[in-house]
Amino acid sequence: MLATVLHGPRDVRYEQVDEPSIILPTDAIIKLSATCVCGSDLWPYRGLQPMDGPLHMGHEYCGVVAEVGREVKTVKPGQFVVGSFCLSDNTCPHCQYGFQSSCVQREFMSGAQAPYARVPLADGTLVPTAAVPSEDLIPSLLAASDVLGTGWYAADAARVKPGSTAVVVGDGAVGLMGVLSAKQMGAERIIAMSRHSRRQALALEYGATDIVSARGEEGVAQIKALTHGIGADSVLECVGTQESMKQAIQCTRPGGVVGYVGVPHGVELSGQSLFFSQIGMLGGPAPVRRFLPHLMELVLNRSINPGKVFDLQIPLADVADGYRAMDERRAIKTLLRV
Image 1 (cartoon, helix red, strand yellow):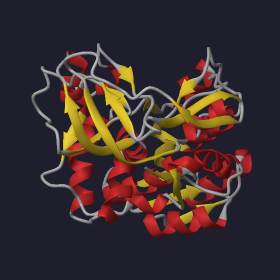
Image 2: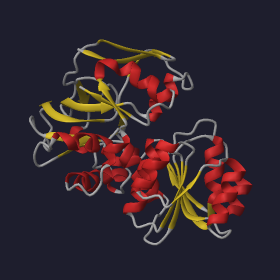
Image 3: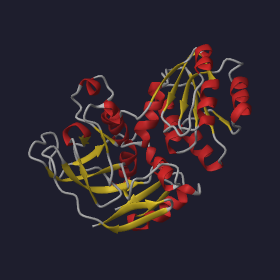
């Protein structure tokens, strides 16, 4: 089959690869209904993350089960499923504590920018729907696989509560999902930090009450001004750079919490500044599997529409164009139709 392979910086190819097959009895093979390009895919694409060799790209996925291994019990061929980008058994102590992204058998999904994909640990990773969903819901169900689940985790980790004030640092797809999530969790005020008009408009649609376009010290000053010098109860850090993390910490009130989900690149924190800030911090790879049943229910009953974050939809064969569009910030997130 033809699938997406990254050979080096800005060298994405749609080329012939072997079709996936059952390797372990806990595997499933799914026929993708749609897949997409993730913001984290841009790190190796831009040459900012080391590569040992060609990478089979794609970790966000939904589709119909085509085949299962002999030990798979909870999904069967013909079912529509959504899975997390972190593969987990959903039974180990970390999974039972709600941190499936730290499963003792954890693997990271790959090779999903393709017509078919192998999903290890299928029983613990895949969540089926009662029936095959309507076509218009596919983008939103795909979003639940990572970008929505990650934005939701940012809000959950930041302890967003009804009536609280939340700040979202980052206006990429995850940041926008963080806005949606904070709204669903009852935040009264949601301040989105964004410089781009299209992203600002979607943030407002998803529930942002204020937009701050400044960054760095000026951005922090504006947040403090909007909160009467106090800072935010909850701050969602959705970028992963030194500047964004510093900004997030400085926007948080004493006793507040930063939920950080941006994959860190070059982030170093001062122990003394953390000590005197008196804030909490929780983050890392999102335990999407914990949230999937609830998020899928919200999508299926049309309470939320995270699929709007896909502002570019193209055939999988044109995947290189999708990477370029996101790299050049011409698209928030590219959906690939299989």
